[in-house]
Length: 143
Image (cartoon, helix red, strand yellow):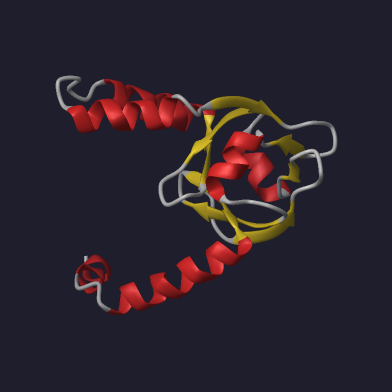
């Protein structure tokens, strides 16, 4: 399970150091892809396989399903960590997420999200406000 968040800097070649705690959970090979809300998702290979099966089993006759499948699969890339604990993030993914230099890597249970730092700060403020109005949150903790 991925938890916590780490600030990182992307170097001039598009490489970023993966925190040691995340490296352990990710394993040798994993997937990066576009994420929702203009971030980058990182999935351990086993999680990716499970997710891929679910997405692939959705009904193709629905246009929204086809759009979502294209969105996820067309940007998915196999990645390995180099000897210095880094991965290389393609320019197309960095551009999609608006990432220039400073990022925040966020553990979100079964995946990692990479956010442009400024964008993350804004999203995090909105997140806190949204939680105050999330009626189901109390029910979740009462279970």
